[in-house]
Length: 558
Figure 1 (cartoon, rainbow, N blue to C red):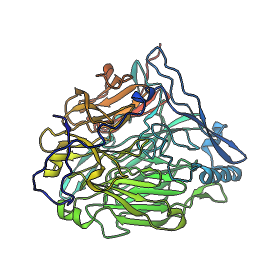
Figure 2 (figure 1 turned 60 degrees about the vertical axis):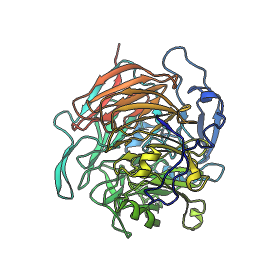
Figure 3 (figure 1 turned 45 degrees about the horizontal axis):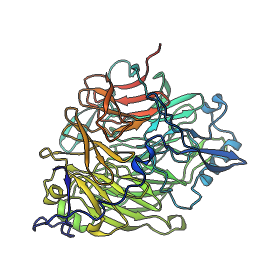
């Protein structure tokens, strides 16, 4: 059995015994909203238009179905610099004013932090591209096509050697190479170039041309490895945000001639803390606020106060306006001190969501944050085991939670490893359905699931690529790809990209998401495991492996 019918387990998170009689959740038979939601081609198209420093949001018509494989892509009209030469120099005073105006105006008309309907599309931004892990505050935007149909390796970086360094965890010191989990590059248009910016296991942030592999800007070196995905400032400020195992989450400027550290947040700045000092999560920047969780097991919110100085160089003056433990006493009693926040925070409406390595899923009300009031926790659900995958939120506000199976708790055995939760409900009533993905101890799900039409697609440590119905949890199809599928699935233009631990990146046709997909192509990169998530933008794919290399992929010429 894959689908579990539930009777609510004990509300005591630490309870490990007691007999449980099963029932079907009352949510499981809820009516579907238009079958498969008119397929993937009913994409939302929207544009941002700047006039006199103000931005307006307008929805454009849906696109028709293409007869060939390439489905018309989401079109995002964003504000970019019309003069490519200006992208490489400090902005003028008027440009600085425009960027600051964008930061103020780049909000939804509804007044909420994130419009709940903005799912599966690029969020409003003055920068065109995929700027943070999984592209949006709901972690549901995967990039823009076309996806190569006849892929070839366009470049390898570095050309010789690898991106490697030694790192120590406890008493274990070893070499780490390439891009690890989650490791998704940011791809964005700047001047006449498509930039690829990523942190690597050599401990550096790299700035490349996504089409040629050419270095566009000097690297920024930290003092330990970088495992997570970077975030590019969405409001036009030339800033990349990233964490490192050297204790610090940083804001780094990429104007001028070399990168500059503008600010860093020490993992030990606020206490108490649990676990360690790493930063795996990809932060969110909204309305001049940075939201990020750390492996110190705390959630952090900083008011960035971004601006440009008299010389046109970007600057920040951050204020850590809120921080709180990501755990409570019940959780520590249940699982111990490993309660780090390794996933990337998600936001829908006025609620900030995240989970931790203790399996605690939380929602915090941030509706009054701008007015100086602290967030309040409004949702709590314990899944029983480690949740490193980021939460994915759909247009109804439902949460999709992927968990590992490491502790062998009775709750994890009962609930399963993929859950759909309704955060408008409290306690055990929040559970809509759950799916088992246990293939022995130390299995389960590391990668963040992909929301695609009526389905949820995910890979498992046991090597299964699977899809389930997002309304019922019914298993639809699965494909065996070996073991150690840590990459988060990426779906663009009806093509699903998924790598495995043999160094092969594959594409599958998921235009009909409910049927087992056919393989479109398989591209061997090297013998390194693909743990990182690929980035896709306008025909370019950038992906790294644990061999130490990063690759640019394009459609073969001719």
